[in-house]
Length: 230
Image: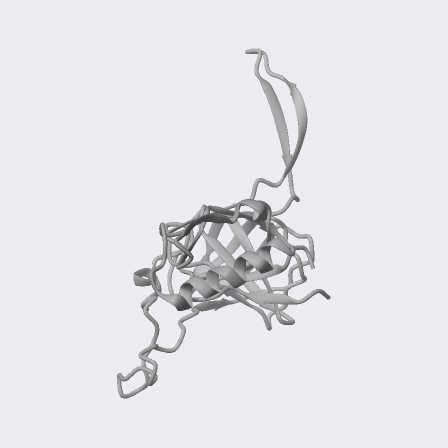
């Protein structure tokens, strides 16, 4: 398995969009004269990220330099999806994306809190390459809707999916349809993550360097990633 590099946490994006176009084949022509396509499960997800115009501090500029080198080499990056309209709101999950302090309400000595990654248990097995699974959302209610992004972590790997459909049964057990399909089989030992991470490679690495300013600033351009299949 190729190495997977963690995204440098200091390089926070200011914009992100996760989308899963899937695969399709040409369909027929409607009576109204419109060409149609037949969607089918498959394809890979994509992620676009934009960044501030520049960073002032040396640490972030060094991180940007390191990242550009990794991207240019075709490296796989593990990237956390930051809070956005594509994720279930923290308020709906009863927490905060600022993280959780210790029980004495104090953060770590670095000023950082514990990371907050809420989950919901999977309640029935689902096959690899399947497009649906069931999760118990009784702890949160019916907070998951179409358009949300969720994910899973298995065997040291991370997977992300767009919610294409969701329905609820008694006890707020959700049947969730996703794109792209499940990359690994699910069991009742797994948990659906509301704050997923992606594993992806950069499609426009040659354009990652946006600007250089007097040798003391390195700017990242908008980056386009595609899922790494492992």
